[in-house]
Length: 142
Image (cartoon, rainbow, N blue to C red; front, side, top):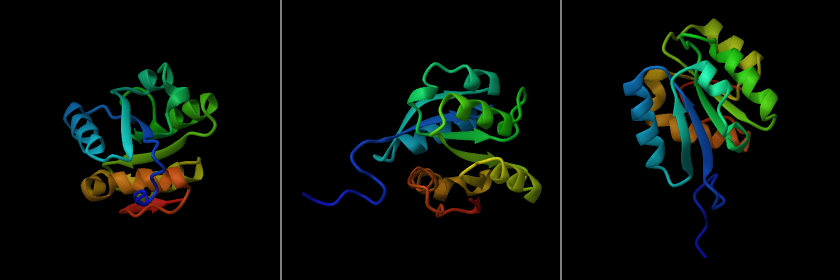
């Protein structure tokens, strides 16, 4: 039997995408779907939709925009982790502010990505977050 790709044990990592910009959300879902290690369970456009999502207990990694229009991404992370304590979280932001990264990581995010870095690094960051290791990505990590 051939060895599994790094970070992949045969069971795809189940991802919830929380992003309010429709084009970016669609692009993220398509990018993640192209990686055999990942499966997107759903994508939602608001913090409130994420916090009440019926599949939260089944999610391994949540990819959350820190700047959602209704609920701050860090608050969403806290709410989701109350429902699913084993949940890994990757926070993303388009602002590039170091204070946002520091706040997200201090509050328990496993990785922080700037949206401009997502194209090349998003799948590896999700796999790394699931493994609990440092992500291979641009941005900050825990």
